[in-house]
Length: 294
Image (tube, rainbow, N blue to C red; front, top):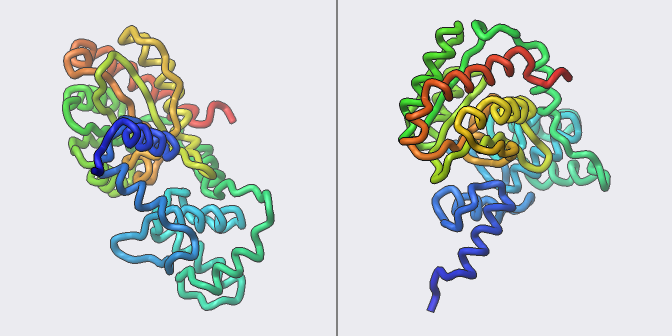
């Protein structure tokens, strides 16, 4: 008889760990979607811009290959959006192929011819993100910031938002349990940075930023490191190194983004004022130096 036993739970945890998801052994919607996406390999299907957007490891592979050749396909997020379509068209135009934005047999053959073994597949988008951060304003008053929470931490999110607003930033505070809802609103707000909070069972501050093989958000990683410096002393927890993950909210936002697991609501509420000040300091430092001096 088929059953979800210990061996299955361990297999789910191993998959979640490999995919940069929250490791809890539960095959929830996010894990199941990741399992489906992992089943696609480049060449299994035609890839093109549609609604809803195509998602899968085949899309990630396409983004890898285009980025390695200097065509900006956007983040290597496995989501075929307008940036990936435009990069695909640019590649096709350069290769004298039909410029239709459809990755089919001829386009795949051209990509295979140009892909050298051991070629560095780092996304050109990482360089673009780094350059955009280098050219950005160093004043908090010029920054558009989204603070989000998935439930249970509305007080903290509001307090951080007020603190940043008092320092001149333009702030939106989002209260949605759904990752995609918050990501869509953050993108529509044209935020420069996203900071989100989720609950945890223990006193902690575990920050995560978006990272997959071939792409890592340099701005998100820097903000996560600053949060580790500022926040744990406030709540009396040991610093936890930032973790690169592909959580849905980090994957779907278009700007540098960080999420923090924060502990129980009771503990967070007891330290709300100090936490709000600490997160505001981290964001202020990030705006002044989003690349750690590089």
